[in-house]
Length: 124
Picture 1 (tube, rainbow, N blue to C red):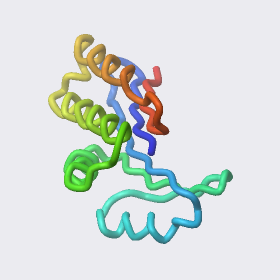
Picture 2: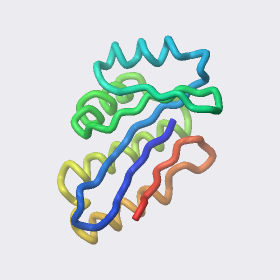
Picture 3: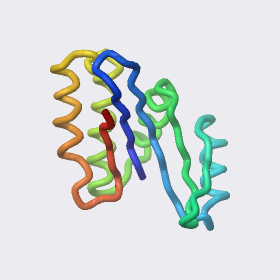
Picture 4: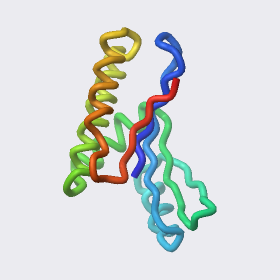
């Protein structure tokens, strides 16, 4: 699973993305999940994987995060998803447009992804 945050400049629109990567053999599962959730797109990768990608902020906030709150992940991935949820909350409150808010997001990001395949990237 990939949790992705793109930041170009402090005052530009930010994009938060949720990406779930599975083996291509799970393509029907990913497509069923998109149908069930009512959001997201798929893309195939040359490594033999399929991604479920959600980039619409309202879908992440109103569908993805509540889904994983109801059906939590196990272990470190759940902790990273909780951090991702906190970043989503900060962005919803427009904290990301201030230097302090951006620094808080970076601080949360820096404690994520230890011993997991979930990553959150800040791109300038």
